[in-house]
Length: 189
Length: 358
Image (cartoon, rainbow over all chains, first blue to last red; front, top):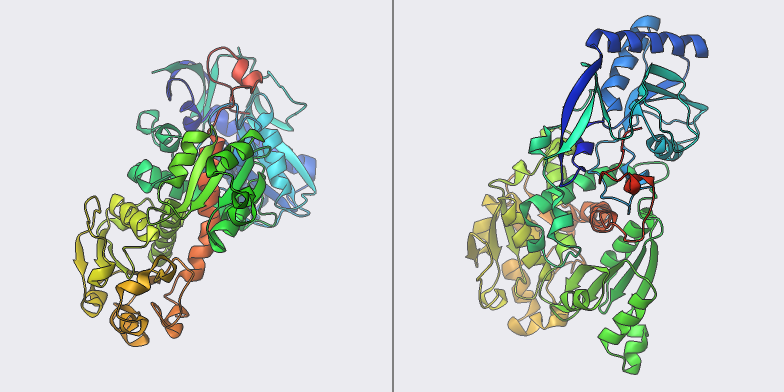
């Protein structure tokens, strides 16, 4: 869960209290490298591949993944970022997040989009992201890569590439960055 | 493309100002510098939305917005309606001139009737100052002031601020999304013309000054408001030629003849001679100074034909940005509203906040 989301904890903003380091920085790098290999294997190369990171937690992972893919196949991989605040289904249920930058590097029609996020949880962000992507053109296919799958899905969403499957309690929080994966709680200030 | 800079620590994050300042946008002073900055930042996201192949997002799906205009308008009304439609809200358009108000129904009864149909926001333009504030007292819906008499026109000021920020960011060669409002510190703005009758001037002065700009009013004595108490201006001048070389932004106001501005002047020609931005006067402007006008322009009165079409004139860009800025205002006011009847797993988790990742 990225920093800006924590703002929503009552009474406006919470503090993340880490409990367990689940993945070390090297583990995250290895997971990204493995996911990169899986992407190349499954798609037999990187033709038409565009990497899109979901704001905000998925963006650094997406840039790193694109970099690894480029080094691996000696080609260029367009990389972008997408904010789905305007597509969420919980507008009206809770305050909206301040939105972050959306920058899609090319027309997505006919492209193979690798959607990258830090944590897969309810699946609602991914649902919103798929709707948002459709407004940028009809992608040939969309595949989902996440660093952590923590379960508790509320929609029929399944990741294609997973860094780590991690069963969690509903009230726990998972913090993902290139510096590792930490399990903890958000405590109201 | 480079990754964005990391976000600030949770401690530095502030609550969204609009949600606490109230559900209405009646005056720029409702926002304060922080609120203005929030609107400008959110507007960036909607400028990006406008550049998409499908420039429409579902953010306000199911919300109903009414435009209640008791005065003529082209750009403001169409701009608000476009903004609401691009947010997927349903838009009801209500022209007072062709409504039951003509049959003698009071504004209050009319507004309450419309509100009873289930409306989330009223966008109100009215010839009387304070009318939107009155409407806000009558209904539960959000009210946005789209211009009330001589009082205020807050979204115009916001889109003007956005346009200035955008142009200055472009000149500095950095993405507008990385611009805060620092560019406004010490920016010299001259607001020229019919200040007394202009709601744009009042909102503009409040907004520019809140962001740190130095605002000078330039007008004939008869068109300066009788009291400038509460106007955060650095000066008042009656000599446009002397002011022009020293400003970064020359903001022209329309001569509001429909509000009787003509009777404060010996003649329109004399006004143009003293305060119109002619081609000769435009030559006095410093390199890079911007020319702005809220529209509709009286070409040949406050702005010469040739000047209106100069590259430094931002008039059409103001209009284009108007849609994005109004989308931001609608989104911040309506998207923040938590509906009482809303249910869902996100709200039901019991610990007060919902899962937001994945």
